[in-house]
Amino acid sequence: MLAKQYRSFKHDLDARGIIFSFSGYLSEEILYSLGNALRQKMTLEDANVSTVKKVFSVFVEQAQNIIRYSAEKLSGDKGQSIELSSGMVTIGTENDRFFIVCANVVMAADEPRLRQRLELLRSMDREAIKAYYKEQLREAPEEQSKGATIGLIEIARRASEPIEFDFDPIDEQKFFFCMKVSI
Amino acid sequence: MDNLTIAATERSPAVDFDFAAGRLSLKGESYPEDASAVFGPIFAALEAFFGAARDREVSFDFDLSYFNSSSAKALMNMFQMLDQAAGAGCRLTVNWFYAADDDTMKEFGEDFSEDLSHVAFNLVSVE
Image (cartoon, rainbow over all chains, first blue to last red; front, side, top):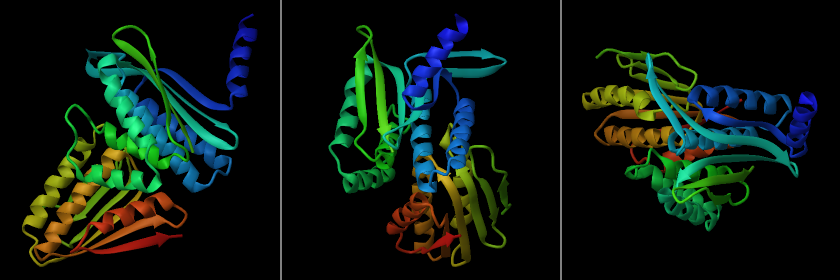
């Protein structure tokens, strides 16, 4: 039963073209290890350098967004200060393209601003995204933001299609936020 | 002033600032958790050095294979500082190294160089 259950779970992931999927508490160390495994896997399979870079870059920005902005965090001080953020990162291939999906819980109060930023990026073409990136690099960071805007622009810049995103309400205070990027 | 040498870590670049010789270099990857913790000491050392550099000849090598968006922001600030120093008389050359097949790092070099009016900027493709 056990093997059947998990074989079917694994089969479902494989059928969706998923290379790996992480769900749970993310830290910078996990980001580093997963990122390295991802680059090694892609390099072994002869993906070209530029594609490996783009996928890795989107992965890092998405994972760091979860680490910084997830509304589900655990923190404490057990000899050293620890903070873990919950979320999900999935990487796979479909139609000969790589895709990276991230998901995490966001506070309802943060949803309008995030939606607005993503819609703005969706409305821009490649040249406009590049110009917006440069403009934001020169700007001082927004208050309350540890660099979210520039991170999202970096993601949009590496993507080969407009970023897909969605919010699913959990309750009055929270949304489940999901974003998909194709390279 | 004292040279600044910081070994690379898994997510931050190697810093090798030989101020006496006027040779500065950043090499590796940069995607730290907190970019200000990594770049703060680098900026402090560069500010002190360029504050007294006058018309010295200085070369600065950037040999970075990947950096995240918050590091890109720190690098943009660094280039603004370098261009000011060059505008004030320092004879500064920046060499931006990128792997020949790495369009992303090449494009970053082009982007950063667009804003420079006083620094001599070389884009160097490495096979």
